[in-house]
Length: 163
Image (tube, rainbow, N blue to C red; front, top):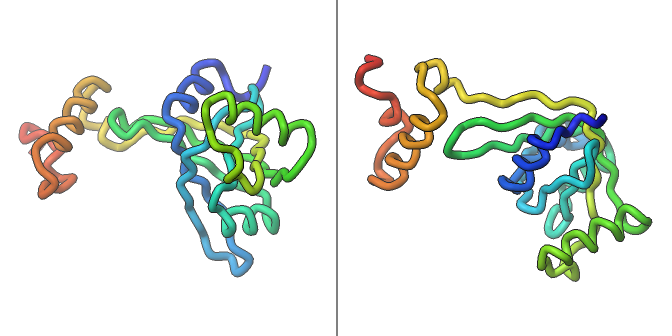
């Protein structure tokens, strides 16, 4: 059995946006959002290199990565750690291209495919849960926050009863 359970796979496919962390040659950290992130199988995540020259270069030099996928309303998600391989050809490369094509993607824009063999998965949970709110209440707070005004701050999310 792989590290990516059915529940985790469904979550990644629904969210689709992952934040990929890499390290530059000089040791500086980099985080890049990848909207093409998806699940290949129970052990591997993949994303497309559409305009990702720095991410790909960093992973070529140091293949270790962490990817965070978070539901922005529930403030829950997963951290995935693993080793990346940049693919330009081969069976897996063509399989991933076909997967993207079947979803309606214009694969002509892809420069490469990045395969991440996941060796560790950990839950990612926002500190907002220390307020003893359940997921529905947290979703409602964020939906209210987004609906009311862009002038509000994150502090407006804290219910008054907690002061």
